[in-house]
Length: 111
Image (cartoon, rainbow, N blue to C red):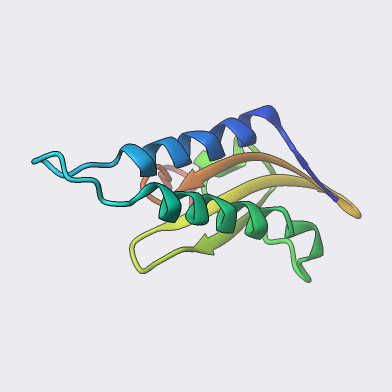
């Protein structure tokens, strides 16, 4: 089972809010509400099944390791990868954060 930390739930809600409100310089929305909701649901399904992964990869980046021992990368498109950062206590996973590659910093000792 995957247990969601309040921070991970908040991260998912913030992702959704960001997608819904993402606009170009002239105020045009990049994504309509229905597509943003589908995007959020896809993230939820992907991260809610991390307990069934055959392999639990250790967190590679320092910015991830501060939140958990493992990280699962969900590549949404060619520019965006979402990371579920979690701790595993078999058979359960405790999802601590959801981070994007746009916010991931390898830093010293990262990769």
